[in-house]
Each structure stands twice: as structure tokens, then as C-alpha cells.
Length: 88
Image 1: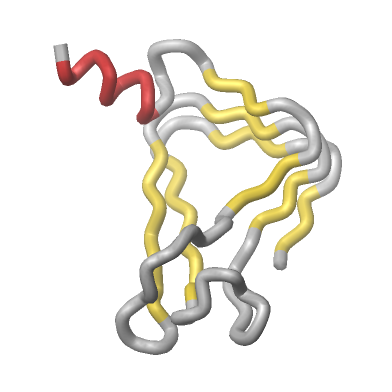
Image 2: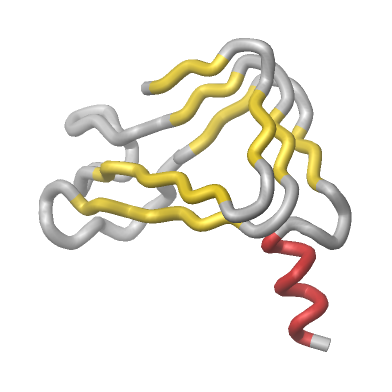
């Protein structure tokens, strides 16, 4: 786990790489996790790269980033907002 104090801001074209085991809960086999103390601010387009450590990942929810403050996105710039516009 990587703990980042005082918030985190990721700008356009950031790539985050996570090592994930075949244990979605991370309780038996650990997974990478970014823990942000404070706000998480995202602007632009982001890439998530997954490195499976034990072959194929099991179905389930893998927590990649947690934050204790607010999630802030620059409207119209995050990947999610961009995807919505592309569907129109």
C-alpha cells in the first residue's frame, strides 16, 4: 500500500500500474493499493495498467485507490465524462 498524505492530484495522461493477485479481497494475497489522505483530484484522461501476479484474475471487485476527502473531477476532462460525450 502506498499512502499519500495531503491529497493527490493527477493531471492528463497519467498511468497508474497495479500488481494484482488472484484474490480480489487482498486478504490472503496482497494487491497494490493507493491510499490518499485527503482529496483525490482527477483531470484529463487516465490509464490503469494491471499486472496479474498469479495468472488470470478472479472475478470480483479490486479496490485500487481509496481517499478520505472528496473526489474532484474537472468537468468534461475526466475519462468518464469523455466516454459519455462519445456515446452521443
